[in-house]
Amino acid sequence: MMTPTHFGILLVLSATALEGFGQVLLKKAALVRSGKGSWRGLGLMFFALEALVYTWSLRYLDVSTAFPLSSLSFAAVAFLSRGLLRETVDRTRWVGVLLILAGASLVALRA
Image (cartoon, rainbow, N blue to C red; front, side, top):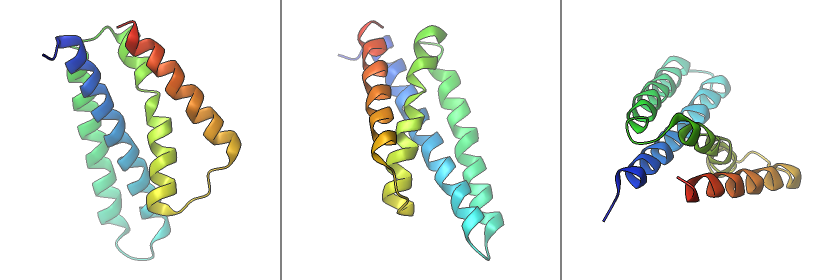
C-alpha cells in the first residue's frame, strides 16, 4: 500500500522527469533552425507542469525532503541529454550523478 510519503516521493520523481524533458526541449529549441517556438513552448509547458507536480508533492512531504530529492533533475538531464540529444557526458559528470543518486536515496530512506 502506498503511504502519503511514498506518494509525495513519486510526485517529486515525476516532477524531476518533467524538468529533465523541459531542459532537453529547450536545448532542442536552441539547436533547430526552424520550429524554435514550438520546441520552446513545449519546454515551457513541461516546466509549468513540473512546478504544479512539485507543488502538489509538498502536500505530502516536508520541503526539507522534497527539495533535496529534486536534485535528481540533474541526473535526469544527464541521462536524457545523453539518450535523446546524443551529448557526451564525461566520467566526472557520471560520478556526480552517482553521488546525487546516493544522496537522494539517503534522503528518501529517512522520509
